[in-house]
Amino acid sequence: MKKKGKAYFLSVHRTTLIPYMRSGSHKSKKDMDGTHKIKWTLYISLASMFIFVSVTEVGPFSSMKRLYSSYEPDLRHKYVIVFDGGSTGTRIHVFTFVNNSSSGRLALQNEYFEEVKPGLSNYAHKPQSAANSVLHLLDKAKDLVPPSQWDETPVALKATAGLRLLPSALSDSILDSISEAFRSSPFFTDEESVGVLDGEDEGLYAWYTLNFLLGRLNEASHSVVALDLGGGSTQVTFTPIELDSFIRTPKDYIVLKKIQNKTMPVYTHSYLGLGLMAARVGILHLSSENSVSVKNDETKFRSSCIHPHTKHTWKQDRKDYIVKGRKDEKYGFQDCYDKAVEFLGDTVDKPEELRRRDIYALSYYFDRSQDLGLIDSESGHTSVGDIMKACQDACSLKKTKEPLLCLDCSYVSALLHHGLGLPERKEILLAKRIDGIETSWGLGAAFNLLR
Image (cartoon, rainbow, N blue to C red; front, side, top):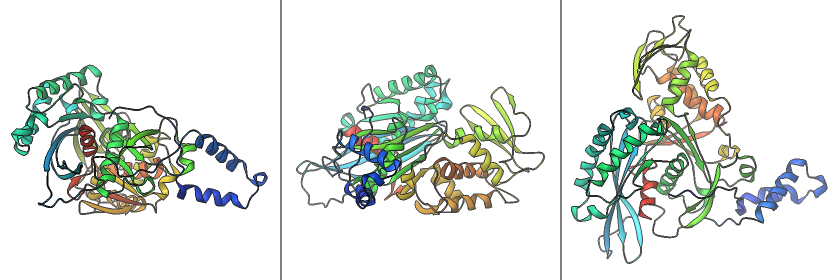
C-alpha cells in the first residue's frame, strides 16, 4: 500500500455528534465552558475542510468470507503468497480466493500457514541462509498453487521490526538475497515484492484483516480496535469516531486511508522498540542488581523479574541472554510491573476512546494470555484486571516452568494499563485465528497485492 499524505480528519458521523449537540442544546454560548468552546471552534473549522463518508462495501472485496455454491458460474481461484519476516520467525501465508468473473466478487476461501524460526535478523551475516529459509517455505506454495497459475500468483515478503532495528547495510543484504531467490521462482514478482514493512502499514493491515474476518468494515463506528504486540514493535490501530480523539491525538497519528474504495480517517501508530522481545532486554537492564555482565555476544542478568532459583538462556538477534534470579531473592509481580512502567515511561499515547470501543489484542497478547491460562482456544476474552491478577499469581509460584512468563506478563499488564491507560475493568478480546484464518497483517497485505 503506497503511503498517502497524513492529515487530521474530522468524523461527523451522526451518532458521534448527537451527545455533543445535546450537551449544548440547553446552554447558551455564553454559558459554555472553555473546553466546549475550544471543541466547537475546532469542529467548525475542521468540518468546513472535510466531509466524512461512512465506509460501505464497495469494490472487488466482500467484507466477510462468502460460501459459494457449486452451481455459481464463472468461478475461478486466485492465489496470493505473503511472507511475514518477523523478528522471531518467518511465516508464509498462502491465501486462496474465489473469483466470480460475472459478479466481480472476490472472497477468501482458505489460508495455508507455516512458520520457521529463527527470524531473518538472526541471519545478519549470512544473507544466503536467510534466503534458504524462505525458499524452504516457498516450496510448500508450489504444492498448493496449480502450476498453470504460478506466473500470475504474486509473492511478497515484508520484514518487520527485526530488520528495521538492523543497520541498513545488513538488512539490505538479506533482502537482496531474498529478492534474487524470488526472481528465480516461478511466481510473479516485481521490484516492490521484497522490502521492510512500514510500521504504519503493519498496523493498518492487521486492523483490516481483523475487521474483514469479523465482517465489521462497513461502518467506522462498528469496527474494532486492533492492538498488535510483536517481538520488536507494537501497533495501535482504529477508526476514531469521537471528537476528542481528533483534538488530542499526536500529530501524524491519524491518517487518511482508502478502505473498501472509500476514504476514511485511521488512527495508527507503531512503537518501534516496544515489542515483547525488545521490552525484555530493557526491563532486564532496569531490574537487575549491580551491573550487567556482557561478554562478546553473551549478556547476563540477575533480575527481580526472574524466579530466584531459575537460570535460563534466551537467544535473540544473534545474542545469548543468560537470566537468573537475584541473589537477594527480590522477586514478584509488583516490582517487575514497576520496572515495566519505568521502561515505558510516557511514550505511549492514551486515546480515551479506547475505553469505549471493542478491543482485540493479537500476537503476543494472545500467546502470553494463553500461557497464563486465561484462554484455551483460538479466541476468547478477558479483562485488563484479569491479566494483571493472573500475572500476579504466576509471579508468586514457588516453582515455574515458564522462566520468562512473569517478566512478559508484567510488561503486557503495564502496556495495557499504564501505557494505553485502559482501566482494569476493560474487557479485551483475544484472537489467534478467526474462522481458521490467522489474525495477522498478512491478509491485509494480500488484498493490497490484488488491487
